[in-house]
Image 1 (tube, rainbow, N blue to C red):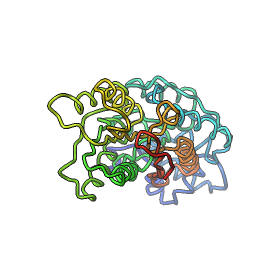
Image 2: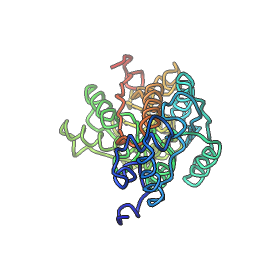
Image 3: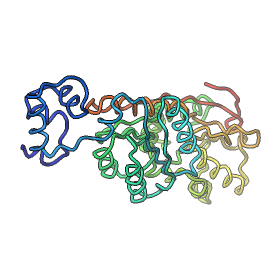
Image 4: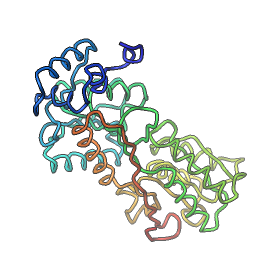
Length: 341
């Protein structure tokens, strides 16, 4: 066994190489399907034993992804987008003949991994990870144990299928919209360590630079919560600081916090300040709030996640896929407009 094989979990490809046969033949032999000559089956069994290869339950029982159970783990059930993604993932899984078991107790990586172990004990064939776990090492551990799809982050450096909104494009849309309204001093309330926040911040910077506004870049620390948005608002509107012309918040909840804090400082929306949120949760479209927002389609994200899950169950050894779902800007009264772009 090579040092590389020792350092990671053996795969079907490793067994195939050791046995001198194709990976598809190993897959058939492991699942007990199709015709495999006795001699080849014996070589495959010997190679698997030498490598201590442990076949995945999903590869044996759900290679055709026609029936079975999958798990859905939700990082923050209080996050409207994550909750809606989980709902659609459950509905769309059922349409594909899969029963979803949902775990909501995953606000910490420790809880998320415990929830996944509990789901595995119920013999789920794969898990869809909606915003949890957070640390890349924890995600990699999960993906090494069970077929996984992560919804909410791109995860370029982790060997796991992932589905997310194109946050760089979404941030560009937000800044472009505000610039089209004549704004130059546009602040960004970032998402801190939250999923997708880094790429959103990258998109904001790129768009500001593209419009020749590098000197006006202003990023305030935040998170995807109302309280974090309010704290950012206190920093933006505090005495001794120049109030921006517009604010692009990393989530609708953060945008609500900014708007609440603006009201406390006597700043009128949209007369004195324009605000753009992100997610386009149901509350954003209410007559009371009427928040311009970058729309993330929970259904599209869930549909892409379910498709990726089925593909992974059917082809356990296929290369990982990173899918980007395009966003859309929905303009409302918080920027003095009302149209969908």
